[in-house]
Image 1 (cartoon, rainbow, N blue to C red):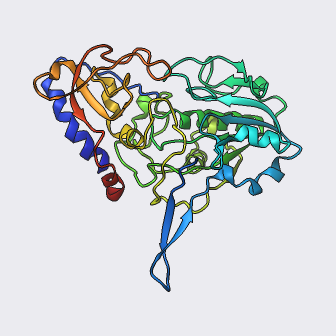
Image 2: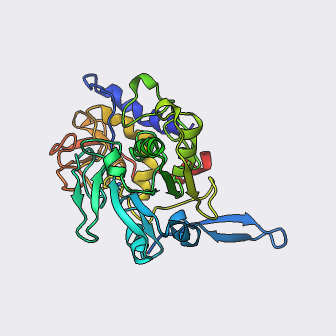
Image 3: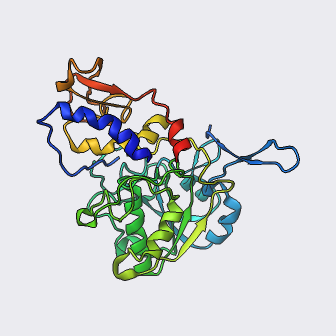
Amino acid sequence: MIYTTIFSKITAITFLIGATTCNQPLPQDTAEQQKTDTSASSTTHRPVIKTIIPGADRTELYVEQLKGKSVGMVVNQTSIIGTKKIATVDSLLKRGISVRKIFGPEHGFRGNAANGAIINNATDPATGLPVISLYGKHYKPTIADLKGLDVIIFDIQDVGTRFYTYISTLHYVMEACAENGITLMIFDRPNPHGFSVDGPVLDTAFRSFVGMHPIPITHGMTIAEYAQMINGEKWLKKGVQCKLNIIKSANYTHASGYVLPVNPSPNLNSPQSILLYPHICFFEGTTFSLGRGTMFPFQVIGHPLLKGKYQYSFKPVSIPGMSDNPPQKGVICYGINLKEYDTKSLQMSG
């Protein structure tokens, strides 16, 4: 198992520190780089290159459906269209779609809030639209929030990991839509861990916003596939069903490689950190540093008491917008450098 392989390699260093205390982990971490899927040609045996097209880019499938309707959008900085990275909200407004409200997840509508930071309602200065925080006073849109809306669009790039909070936001948005008779349109996007279903399944006795459902650490699904699972497993309150309208990505398979064109959150700032994140994040429940407070979060692991045991070192500092008060702030940590770890082996093993 991928998770077990990486986890076992770095777990050994914890035994060098007997006083390390563990708590319930609370990891709360957010031109287009188009990747290709290949399939064999029956005549030439050469790969046929197909460009992955995210759901949001397939405007011909949904713009006409939205005309004449009042629209709310659950979006952030990953909600873009095309190689020019035009915000989905701006694209729809230019097409004459009546976007009335924006709903922002953890890290906010613009994606520049630190992990765990409480976000208040606001007005977007660029569009003048109200921005309702789903990571502030409440996680679930209220009846008042939804008043006057015909459809809500969910367009957020997920990373396919149980404790990444965007799927928890999805859960509550689906529940609110189901209770208020509103259709949820999902612009699907590829999962960078779509090749991996790995790790222990959550014990629901420890259910929280960083783990709501009994799934493994990497679940292998796109955000739209996950929404279908939420409906199918009847995980919403009282088993209510959310009416879904899914705009699928084109040419994507779970074996496809995919590099995200925009960082999904401040501390997942490279393909390496995204691929390593689910495999080492449980160490955030300890006194170890995983590189928050550096420019390479989730690519290193270390602790001050490992001096003399490991040569590699780094020092976490406060970085506004990424980590204001990182673990082991201002202290030199010694440990393992995973920046050069061969993450391609993860996909080969998946």
